[in-house]
Length: 144
Image (cartoon, rainbow, N blue to C red):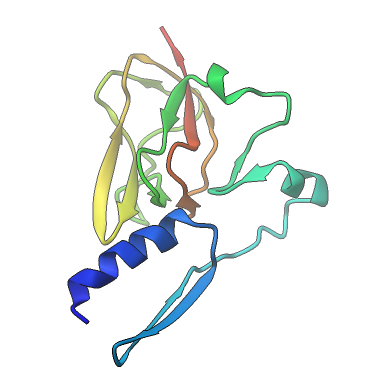
């Protein structure tokens, strides 16, 4: 088995809700484990409304009404370029079209998330350093 043939398996694993996958193929052993750390601060009612990536969406809220940035791919969301750097954005901060507002790491590649219009950050729905899934709301923006 060639290493390139692992990528489709990795992509499917990343897109799934599985926390662990183990495969033996053609004499090769592959084990994928997702690092899932439960948030002990959240009470049980918060956990019922929690979506992957740490985004809490209340049941009455419709995703069609969402204005802001959604995850363009599955990966790990970062709010700053490095652990010791200031975050790209904070609630209440104004952004201009094209401003970098976060990063998603997927398969060891950093993908910049950019504001798609001028506005003000209203809510940051994803948690820094946590997995986010494709098309999940990350940052709510009140566009001007």
